[in-house]
Image 1 (cartoon, rainbow, N blue to C red):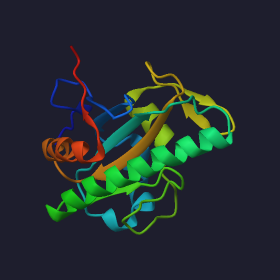
Image 2 (cartoon, rainbow, N blue to C red):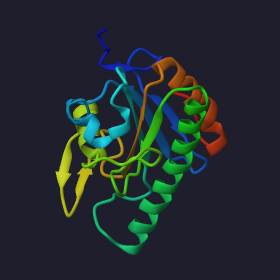
Image 3 (cartoon, rainbow, N blue to C red):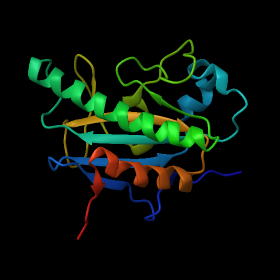
Image 4 (cartoon, rainbow, N blue to C red):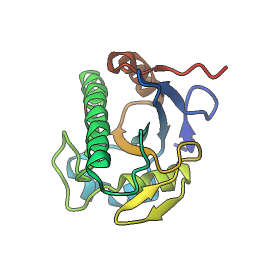
Length: 186
């Protein structure tokens, strides 16, 4: 079976959401990167028998560029991580309740949250670079450069065996519970 390179309902456009404070969230569903395909058993050792996987990229717009390590920026990173973890767990458990193996990668550690961790870490920044082709800048850590938000972007990754249409439906159903609504593009 051939995977399309990216799946979204709007013909290749990501799911664009906006939070209560006006900060954007961009979500897209992709085939796994070559790195995930080559290292799946070492990242997710219990997922050996899964033939088809999908990678969900969740990009949250930060209030600040995440370039320096200051108390204000570290607090923002923690806020965005917590927001992703709450949202990601709700999506993952909803899909698991539907019998689709799903997990989210902890952005801080690179390990899966709900599965047994493997021998190697997942790199969210590398996945976004590989799948969305966003540039990465090497600082003390590697930073994504979003085409609209610059370096004010925080990535999160979910991995699921659910079909993209199911993943999208669950995302759109759960997003309002986290004060994210579909962004009006008009």
